[in-house]
Amino acid sequence: MNLQVRKEYTRLLGAEDLPTMIEGYKIVTDAGFTILNQHGREKEKIVWNHDGKLLFQMTVLKSLPLLQLSNPISYSNSVDGSSLNNTYDPFAMDNLVRAQYEAFCNFNNIYIQSKSEDERVLKYNLWVLSGLNYRQRFNVASDYAIEKKKNEAKEIEELVAVTIANKCYLQLDEQSKKNIDDGINKRDWQFKVDGNKAYKVGWHEMMTNAGANAMLEDQYSHLSLNTHPSNVSVFQFGSMYVERMQEFNVRMAMKLSKIFLAMFIRDYCVYFSGCGEMFNKLPSIHQLLINSYNTMFRGEVYKLNDHWQAV
Image 1: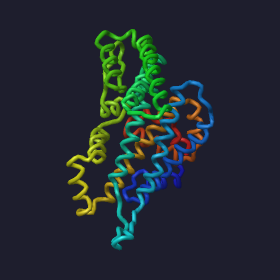
Image 2: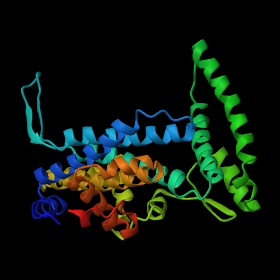
Image 3: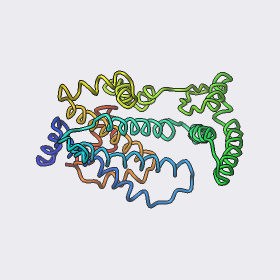
Image 4: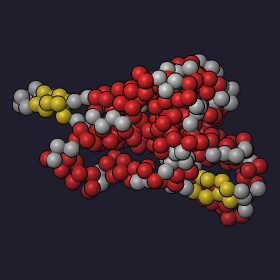
């Protein structure tokens, strides 16, 4: 490896101070946006591929407010003159990072884990049905909204019929079909298909299914506790500022987000094969960091190339 690149790679990979961590985060973010800027211009004729691209865009875009929140916040009150200087709100960051976690898991489950196009379409349709069924709960008043709700109810009926006629669904055993049917009624969409069996999986298991190792095992619980108004989040919030741990928690949020982004970039490039060539043209440090986060937290088979041998 080129000595200069090796030095920079080592500095960024093992970053513990916030400024250096932000540098590394920006590199992963830039890689994501570079792929988006090129691949995003290509129109998708297949609806589930179009939505997969949008899911990636949503996830990469969340890195921008995270970068903003990683900088100190100052505030001045115009009423009483009080102020806050150079503080942080890592709990606001955890909300965004959890959304990135879920988006990555969803993409991996639908687009990477599926062993056939029928399975992919089945999972995609369950995802769509969940959203449409949730929208049916809204109270509407305008003529436009009433008509839209009516049309979506018809769309749900048609999509349920398509789902139960799907070849992947038809080859499932009876209990698995019941699991899917119950999932539709309960607006669930996170299902794993294994041979002739299908069952709902939680977010923790989805991350494990994506190849993540034990180092990421409890992170969803950590992010959720800080995202929801749990009692744990309240006492952790209080003690965080007393113990001056807010910058540490910002670094933790940035580290997790960087890992999830790197894993999503890898999976996106695997599914949309043309993006692999885009990845190979990125600067060396971008390729090395993204490959490293995937191998560190998933394993060697998850690297996109052997670029380290060429530098």
